[in-house]
Image 1 (cartoon, rainbow, N blue to C red):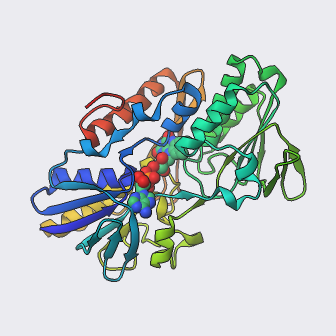
Image 2: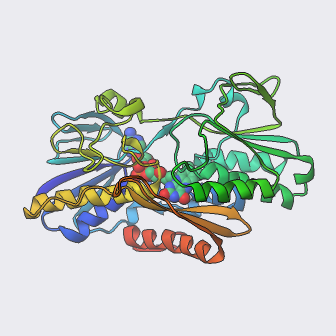
Length: 384
Ligand SMILES: Cc1cc2nc3c(=O)[nH]c(=O)nc-3n(C[C@H](O)[C@H](O)[C@H](O)COP(=O)(O)OP(=O)(O)OC[C@H]3O[C@@H](n4cnc5c(N)ncnc54)[C@H](O)[C@@H]3O)c2cc1C
């Protein structure tokens, strides 16, 4: 039996464990470790924020995982020694044949001075709940929604939030006495896809939302409620930020980030292998040339799983990673658009956009349910 240790049971770790379980349950023993007790889709934070859905009702508990050959352990990873593949958690030690690191990205709100004191975020569950409470008493005013640093998860998410915020303020009757501005260091919302940019910019314009690209908020002055950009300021009544993302500290301390861009884990973009024998990294923590998004973590996990399967079965190596993923984008009015990205299989990345529709909203729900059923054997929001 080959021992595979998967660190992180998010989008990437769950897909990897599932694919190994369905292909080689008798040849591979998978231990899946996560500090949390259940999984929530990233986009469900928008449901918490704007639809008041309870996280407990949506969370898929890891105790329900019933994948042959896979054992889940709720443990916190404390250290990783990539050369020997030795991993220490708060409950034990491991030294697997294959180590897969899928620990996602952490947030560092303190990286922007004043943000912790006077800003709101919706990228974490507690952050989305806190912002929901704030919106309940928001009586109109100037809202600034800013991407504080690159890279960040799900490039369309700040724009989805701005469009849904508009809808929320209309519903609560305060949109007329409010402004919304989105500020981002990126030159366009989804640089790889001109058609997606056009659709997002049109939607913002139609709703009177100001978009300021290529600019970055450096700090907030909490006493004056003023955001400082490099050479101008914005006064705000409500500041919502996408916090700075960082690799989890345990990966920084492991040395796995050496050689990776901007402090992320160095990988071969075609195989997701790190420079260390038998060690892979995938998803948000890896420095692969794709956006941080669940759909890319999932397709990367398939490549790593196929590589492990080919080693076990002594067959030809897995197909190289193609960097493909289809991202749904909430555009308001209950409609969802989709960008179908392919980063690595051709000479240039391509990413056509499919306009917002109720059909794609249904498709997004099917996407969520198909993963819940595939990984947990049940639909999200359904009791075990
Ligand atoms: C508001 C929002 C909307 C989004 N919308 C979309 C979307 O529409 N489509 C899409 O594809 N993506 C979306 N995303 C992004 C998506 O959620 C992430 O990119 C995806 O979850 C990354 O998968 P991952 O496996 O790399 O990491 P994660 O899913 O984050 O999993 C990492 C896991 O590692 C665990 N972990 C971390 N440190 C430790 C430790 N020391 N010990 C033990 N466990 C640890 C965590 O508990 C976590 O479960 C969205 C994100 C947000 C915030």
